[in-house]
Image 1: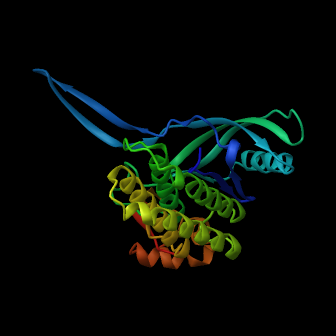
Image 2 (image 1 turned 90 degrees about the vertical axis):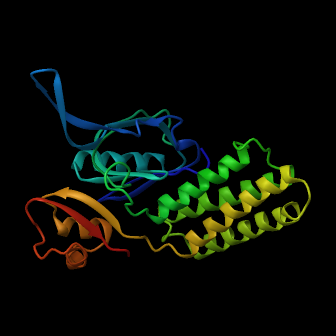
Image 3 (image 1 turned 90 degrees about the horizontal axis):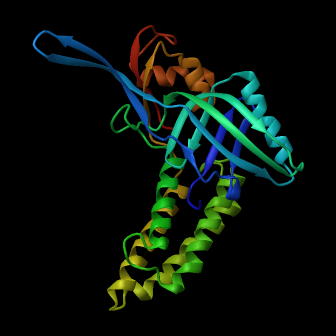
Length: 292
């Protein structure tokens, strides 16, 4: 699944799934709206909506490589600790707990697994708070999926053969950069960032003569591919994440600062952005996580 990434982040660090480790099926990605139904004489019905809630998630895959056993232990440690874990899949993200992890080793370098995850919060903002901030990782994944759509010809126009190799090279460079960067755009190393820039330049150089040509069936996908490549370059070059907005009950600003800002002592930054003074307020609040 080129263009997508899957990451589990917890107290013991991040686990980044890549290449064939990414499951062919993942989900469900939607959620539920809890509704209380009231029936009155005469057939009148009213409904009180209690809010949008994410559904339990599950997926299966295969951990591979020389570090497969160590990564399986790292995931199982997250499960055993019962700690809050951040799960990211393409443009989606949740905070919750790993409720089940079943690895079955066929070899120390080949470990099929099954994971069940119970989300407590939808961090991507979908169906929770309109306009919630999108992380750099989610933005990059979105552009990656749109690039894949262009390559697959989902708009009805086949990608010119001369663009196939540059497009594949860009996708590979981005995935390798995320892998080496522990699943984060800010963590992409300078060497990988340079490789991504070279891959973007290769896409744009190959697309330029087609965009300038008279054949619209080639110019259109070439222009789309070049635009996606340019957008990915901007995200990688400026990984500063926009603010997030979370609807929380009895929030703990210490833990939010540790999770999102990397330092529990920065709870005051969240408090200031959210117009709060108490690090553990009681009630329901819209919490603003400032950009980092």
